[in-house]
Amino acid sequence: MKKIKLKKINDPGHGWLSVQLKLVKELGIEKEISVYSYMSLTRAYLEEDSDMGILLNKLKEKNIEYDISVLESEKTSIRNMASYNEKFIDFCLTIGIGKEVVLYNSTEKDWSLNGTISSDYKNCFFVKNDEGGYYKIAKTTALNYIRPIRERVDEYNMQVNDELLNVKIIYQGGIYGMEQTEKHKGKIPLIEIKQTNGIVNTFYVTNILEENDKIYLSNNLEIKGEKLDDLHNWLNSLKKLESKLKDLMQGNKLKM
Image (cartoon, rainbow, N blue to C red; front, side):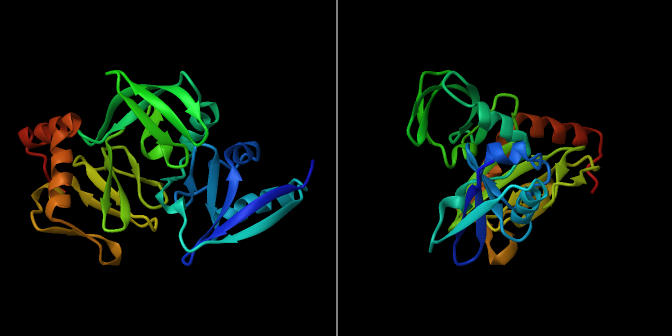
């Protein structure tokens, strides 16, 4: 096998090794990569503290030679990409014209739109939704806006100051936490808020709905004012969550 050329991208705060998703799968390490790394439709960006070493060690184990070039950047788009999720790899590797997807609905702030990729142009896709509207989706950040048709999740992206927050609802039995290894055993749904730096903040949904002032996140970040209103409106729009909380209230089971 020819020597593999890899690129490491550094910004002032961190670094990532840019590799093809195809290589991650071929090496059989797709389940070993953490959520601290990022991914686009074609590449994984493996954070330098742990995930990068997993890939390099596997290359050494297989006697595959490699060269790493380094790019220093004051600002990179990597932090705006979706967190790495091995469940999306097959979707990314098979995406193309005619692929059915779920679209993020920015009006309803949920994943409620069905669509089909209608054309592929350089660094973006054009997606047509079921109502006839068209969306231009950049391939680098596409997983923030489209998902596999089977991946219908209560998930919401929101911008607070300079951070793009990823918000998810975790129902009983769902997996959560920074390492995605914790299983939620309680009846009251959790809300998980992941920050750009990878830190995950977890709350009971009921506490968030009752909060009218501000929500404190790590690194002194606050969700307040219109942003808190937007979060409340999104939560109140979720039919599954509404039904779940209603059942719990009727059964008087709203205990932490």
